[in-house]
Length: 143
Image 1: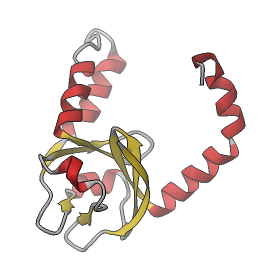
Image 2: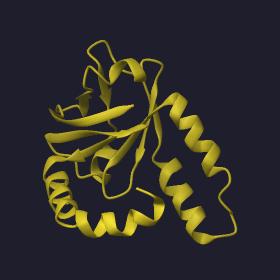
Image 3: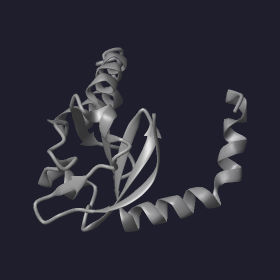
Image 4: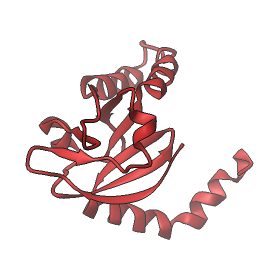
C-alpha cells in the first residue's frame, strides 16, 4: 500500500526519485499515465493489470467510456526504476500535469500520484476546506 506525501525535485532531464519506501513495490516495473485532477498516476505492473481488467468492462458504446480509455491508455508508458530509484517522466506527461521543478509524490492506496507542488497545495487546501461536505456525501457508503 502506498501512503504519505513526499516533496521531491524533478531534474532537467525529467527524472524523479521515488521515495525509498515505495521502491520495493515498483521493483518489477511500473506504468505512468495521465491521472485525474491534473496529476499523473503511477501503478506497479501488478496493480496496472488489475486496473486494466476493470477498464475492460467499460461499455465501448458510451462516449465517456471511450474518452476515459483514450485518456488513460494514450498517455501510458511502461518504465523501470533506475539504479538510483528514479523514473523518467516523458515530456508529454510532464506538460499534462504542469510539472515544474518542485513536485509532490502522494501515496493513494494502490497507486502513486505525482503533482506539481503548487497545484497539489491548492487542491489539498480546497479539499480540506470541503472535508465536512465530502464526508456527508460519503456517509451512504458506510464510511
